[in-house]
Length: 594
Image (spheres, rainbow, N blue to C red):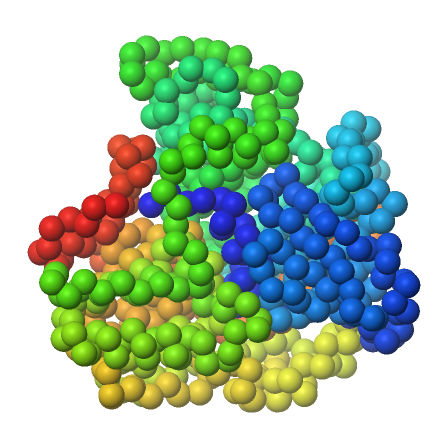
């Protein structure tokens, strides 16, 4: 199924926790709060901000001494000052950092970074390189390393302390000579943490430099370390479906493996990584950052129509031109239904589809019982129409709040289920204040209790509802055939939801392995660690949750019973091969037309 990057990024930035099951808590300076600022102090931030990566605008306004944000088509959300020129919205983990001298705003959320420019301001590409000296880079590397060791409970889930030490030693060697800031950022990306909730991002001028890098004007499909062009935003007559064989004489499989060195997600599986490189804009963006930006590229490809090998010079495009050309050339592309969830019922064919795009509400203004109410409506209609075949489509779900997956399970489980075995963290309020300088109020929020190994366990379940039992709902309980659709663009609570559905129901999983873990998560409560000498920062999750999924499969994504994915032909024709497989082979229905 094709994915619209613009909608995806809008969704990630303003609906997910997440990138996902995240309550982000950047450094909160308790000496600064909304009452410490006067109304006129906020004037310098006001305006409409645009991004070259996202087709949306953010309006920054104020109400007395409170700064307000509002994205295109979204509700207004209040922002709390956390430091000078830095504001946060706790509910969805958004941090906004303003550079008023340059009319810039950086949005950080869930380990992702997006850059905005205030309208009616000059947005010039920065040409001057930033050079970091070895002592500066190594000091920040050491700071990031120590912060991970002292605060991240999932650090050694997929690597031993010795392996982590060896990796960071190697990175120290790579910074033994002066490097451009962009090269140092590449070094940081090689510090694999194997967790989608943790990660590095650039700030300030480095963020502006990276945001202005030009892109290869292609969207691609990747399969078995092969690269196929599926959308051509250049002026060259390269047919969609053509296979990229080499770029600047570098073979396509070598390019993919090189990107993998700098790009990771939950666990060590490459299945989700390969899927994500095929998302709109993702390959081009990472190619510029990792392989390198050039004035032009020599691209060798096998023409889809003539089958001849052709080599052409390809001019890169700005992000703005990339997405403008994409919208013009592919205006007939079918869009994915928006919103956190959708429901479809076909009584003649006796099936229903519950599509869940996120486990986070569309707006913080939506009522708390939004998900339970939606599920009740769905299963009431399923019961009333005697539907025997149910498809739960979790594909492209970025995650969110695990309890919203639990409320879904209540209609398909046969006994009470506690989703999470335990949630732990490495310290209490005093520990984190001494270690990082952050005042976090974890003790009060989570009821932390020290364990024998001197880690702390969450004992209050009002925020982390997944630690308490979920009982079956008998009134509209579903007992028919259950099929769950999954893919590599599922993270955090979405991966866990698939794992739990497989563990506790008769669900048949169809699709491809999820990027998010099937049985654990580190997404709750985050801090941000800023470099002292470089324009880089690190997001670290503080809580580690283990779910009641079989321990053997906890540390990788949810695995499908039927491994089905779109072929190149499916992508070019905008056909959903996964759903067609389900109708034809599992439900014995006529394949649904997309």
